[in-house]
Length: 112
Length: 116
Image (cartoon, rainbow over all chains, first blue to last red):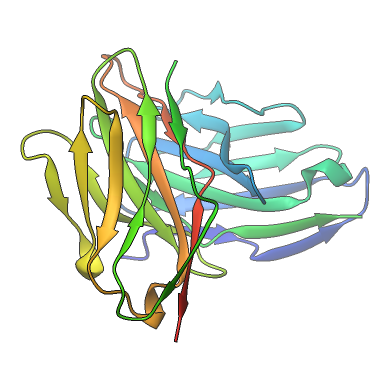
């Protein structure tokens, strides 16, 4: 089992460029999540998907869109990147009932 | 609404000394509680969790935590730390609400620095 995988590991963008962060899990989890991690702010939820076919906004959704492509895959898109989106992005998946989450290795994104 | 407070942003401790990382939460309903660890340049991984039953929970790498409902706390402890325990530790809380999705709130993290 690979667990939760994320691509790319690192990315540098210029302001206004777009990109999609990919996430896949092989644990047959219903729920998937996208977080951003910034120094001194912990983890903040961007979007989540409680089950295949549904997505909902988290705490900080502005500037992002998501797609739950199937049960395994959950992508995060930045349509027009801004320097404020410089962060480390984590994808996670989990069982709905107990909500223990399994995290990917992260994507370090820098927006210049 | 639920919230998590990790009182210490950084905790330095000498190798083989005991450590306690503090976590307090607030919630209007019963909760599940978690501690995660993040090693440098990695994702978070679960250390231990409290779902129900015994209030003393044992996790991986010799860590344990005690759920105290009256004090709304879930402090993490280890009797003797090792250099390899240097990492950032996150406390998290999830409401036991009904429904398919239960929101998880993370604390801002405590950096444990083990000094040789």
